[in-house]
Image (cartoon, rainbow, N blue to C red):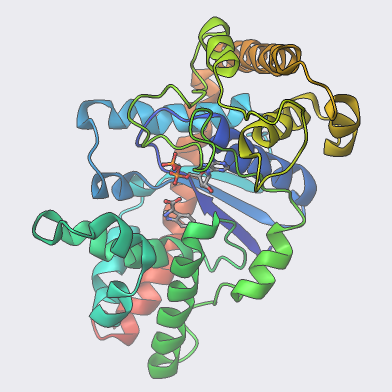
Length: 342
Ligand code: ADP
Ligand code: TRP
């Protein structure tokens, strides 16, 4: 196991949507296609990170498994022996390393994390210590496996940098225990080789499509029926310019739909622009987008129904066994240098 490690996690708090698919699931699947053999790929469900925002606990276990099924439906090859898929809480070293690293992390650092500031703002009394400590658990996720590349969305890069800082501080005190993830610049250079789209909310295209949207009307969920999705696309907010033109700033609604059409039909954006720009019939264009979304959902949902649960669970348990060994080795090194073991 001497290959450099690419590691990433996708939380299973809620039903995933088209933004998650195009911005997270698909890039990871493409990364596997591109780098398998050259890298080890660790793809895990950070289930312990789930309680930091309100969730339905009765669904979490199933949702964690379903997250992995979704990756497989999106094309992840679980037969690849350099790819490991696992659940965070099935590898107890994540929790133990977090407790240790907590004493090597400053409160000031955690208070500066944008995600904490945003999600915690204005509700200081009801903010859990779990949300505050979220980045330390994330650091443990990364450092246990010596991950070099950690592809994440822009909102998470600060946490990867913090993992690096904690590791560096720890190494300065105790010697070369942790392998540091690459710095932000190298991370970006690495992940930029894979296109990461930002999909907008259909009704409020000034903000991103997000599962935290309460109505769900501007969000295409991966389990929406093609009919429901078609209605959502046909009611998408566009603009009153009267002519189709791609302009993410001034015309985010129509541009978002063009992005979706390009991505789902595997067509370069330029060809989509050529085809539709200048047209005054928004309805026809929307119908084409709706058709591409409905086709995508039909195929994706059929793939999902075909995912073999026995095979999937086998892969997960095998990966969890192997990754427990790797994680425990790192943990033991840490326990030794901090004086817990000899
Ligand atoms: P949400 O906003 O729906 O809660 P998360 O913040 O949990 O989504 O993001 C999970 C992953 O999906 C991240 O890698 C994030 O970058 C990606 N992602 C989320 N929303 C979008 C979007 N609208 N477009 C592209 N990628 C997205
Ligand atoms: N915090 C990440 C998110 O919300 C998920 C995550 C948890 C993660 N641990 C990680 C991502 C480790 C990469 C590496 O999207």
